[in-house]
Image (tube, rainbow, N blue to C red):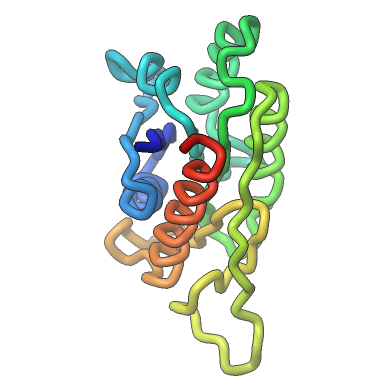
Length: 184
């Protein structure tokens, strides 16, 4: 069976909800990065054993959170031995505004994956971009590179758009399906 891990940082709970939806779709294990930028006990082992790693971070000031960056810098140890080479990778993010420079965060995650010699998976979801589109439609934010969500700055995690969470779940399913093709 394909093993998928979701490694993520969430500052206010919105990215956590997204991570949970991605993990549900991928039947994945969550590996949360804590407020100090550290993985839980066994976190590095979980990532080493995974066939696919889905990374998530809120978009803060046009990039990943410093806690995620600390994890990324620490991943130089598996990078040095090429331990994650040819694993399936993907990424997701959330910010308060519709654009919020979320693509910069996904590019950061993509670059990190490429440095590890990974194989990147996008959403493969058509954008919801017609006049009839509604906020709770699948891929309303319109990303192909990875899953994106938008949560108003004064909205609680419970108030996230269901369409964004459904998109995250479908994205998790896609990553798991691709991983199963590469890692039977």
